[in-house]
Length: 119
Image 1: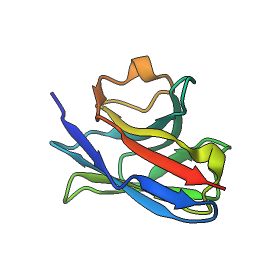
Image 2: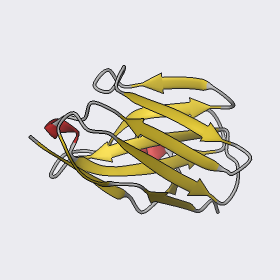
Image 3: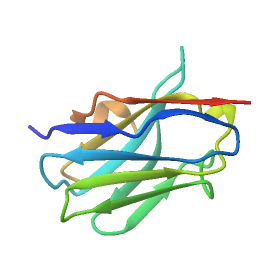
């Protein structure tokens, strides 16, 4: 069982930045960030496969950057130019194979970290 622990969330004003971290108990080929706004579905916003193959949702492309430090088994998400619509609970998720899109396709999850962006 892979254990994931997120950190780094908080409250910022629009235009600000945050850096989220996700510490994993072991390496997995695919790691991803999902977010879930209040009363909305959880959706994938970024993923990284292997060393450096990244994918982003259109809503965050150009503003967010996903990266990983395999020596530390840690995943990061740099959030820049934040907007109020980025307000959500952010989760990291992992799977041993290739990255898929839907939450049900990921067996390992962190507990989430809240990001709140005020206008």
